[in-house]
Length: 554
Image 1 (cartoon, rainbow, N blue to C red):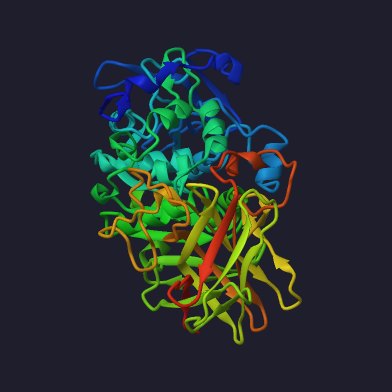
Image 2 (cartoon, one colour):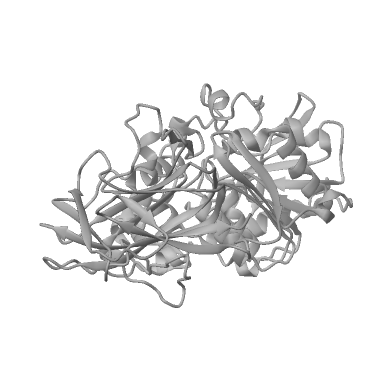
């Protein structure tokens, strides 16, 4: 196992991918004025250790300053744009310009509003010098130096914010934790704050599909870059390497506007909300919606809120932000149907956590403990779910927050089990109600959770009654005939069930999605499991299998 120094393990550093094969246009410093923008390409920034990186700078044409700056930082490459037809499909025809880096603010919109947009190639990416690492203390320090460089430029007003989604959002936690003096505000859109638990493995089940996809996006370097697939092999458990990729968000001391969505289970939802709760700053706001995140990010109302936030803290203009609710969330009913509501905190203080007990004999969920013991079994590799448990609501019921699924399980002819759980919604005609999943797919369920049973050990100090925390530091394989309790973390969500509608809990040995040839589906599905033989779920009597649900009083 490699030695981790400052979040960098030499054993996972490998030759980068040829940037020209990803469309890198080459190094060409110049200034261009077009489409109302003045653009400086490949401006040099020297970092504290002498390494030089290169950035593109977008400003409103004819304006010398002073301007606040929005820094957009990712390893995708400052040249990387939304390709068609992805741009139109993913953003639902939002009209994003050719100048907008993928998943981030559009200079054509932001520069005329009085902002400079700064888009670097990080250390080791494309022509920038050094070795590329992602979500490391090194990257946080590099962003710190870049922010201070921006503040010294003659066109700068000395205030810098950060924007963008996904990678652009994740790095903001690392940058903010270094406390750059001229960082004025953060606006992470669908970030992530625990790479191991939220991307690399889900409940201990490896996610090489998504990691491989990201690997091909973040390693375009003339030098070396971290190989995420190698890192998964070298560091199968949560160790100091993965700990170095958990940002110290408690140190962040600037205003922060966290934007996320219920529809990014398996990628961003958990980490965005976790980071919001841990943030050190008192000036923090949370917005969570249930829509396509890219379409939402570029929508007129969302752009207006984003700009109001930066106007307040990068331009010192008093505005609506001073009276914003601390939390704004959407309670979903189905795809593109839901109601936005203001709240004071997350999770909601008035949440009533109620258990619904599983009964294998009837396939039901029950408000009271089930007296008679029974069991249900299914083939571990079955394509269709066979362990399902349902509850029909007698009155309108909102479930907003964290779920916990406790099961008593046994493996037949196996020493491990990979469990995939989903909370589904069925309407009054018993038709499945779908939600967005991985933002753009339309076959998601209300909530999702995963657990490899050999990773069932709990960290009691970090676990909450409604959210188990697994240390993932060793395996405990099952003995023949052994029945063990497990607690599965179901990622947070918000769903309204009308009277007569049904909640169904599904447990199976693979992700509970229909077959699909849609591009990208595979990056969110776990292709390799330890499942074989039969899974057995025990309920009733001494086996208090249940799901704890977050009921919000009407």
